[in-house]
Length: 391
Image (cartoon, rainbow, N blue to C red):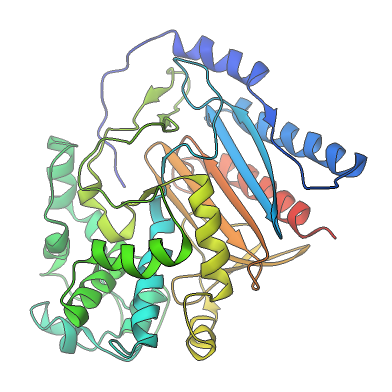
């Protein structure tokens, strides 16, 4: 999502970043019964995070949570806040960006299980007020990004409003109005194209099918069943305390805190959720394993097609219904990635949910803005996946 440029403040941040690179790395608790091999592995993983923090345009802070069965290992580098210098904790809030699309997928698939929705339901049936040319698009196509819907976040009018007032309060349920006059990009189901519009439509279909607000559906169908205590979908721009500060890191300029630069109302179901590494760990273990849905619906979710998350995750990416399959040199994990000004996320777990990885950075990394750093990040993520899957 575009970020309006703002005046840069606090020129001392560059020096603080350099200090953070040298002193901010801390290893968290290791698995119960772990020995010298695990400690050596943690040191190697921590070194890779330190190198990410030192990279040009790298994050001021990064935290990874590896959970195997009932025990966790936390590896981190840098800091949560360049002003205070405190390390990132697992209960720090963060903008989860497009990993929020997995949450809208969880809501939709749960409603499919309850027969309130069908994967073959169409926009024309559930949302007849949307453009007639979109009418044949199905819920399945929205979830696996083969809908052809134009991306509202790329609309010149949307960008103009956001640039004029980054804190502008959008009517989240009218975001698709920005592209209502645009035709489909291609015949629905004929190709893959990642679009933020897809998950806005998913949430609207869920509301239409139940008569309940999407935020209420999240609480009842996802947060409560999975025990998520610090996850929410706000409308404003403020972050709840404590939080990891997100930064625009564009050398040679000093890092600029953009944690509260944008209103979440402009991304809503496509990326507006705020959560913590601890809650994201609980979510992805339940979501990837199919704990919320039946085996029949899980099989439908795992119908893989060619397509990558944004940004691309580790290894070879293929797309399912609001979930991605990351095939690495060490094995397969399922999950989602996301990026937002100030933040980059990866959540992944084994198909049985017994092992998981939550990976949070405090700067935005994607193919268009930082391709070399993304390449480095994907390598590090794959190495962490290998550490997770190691027997």
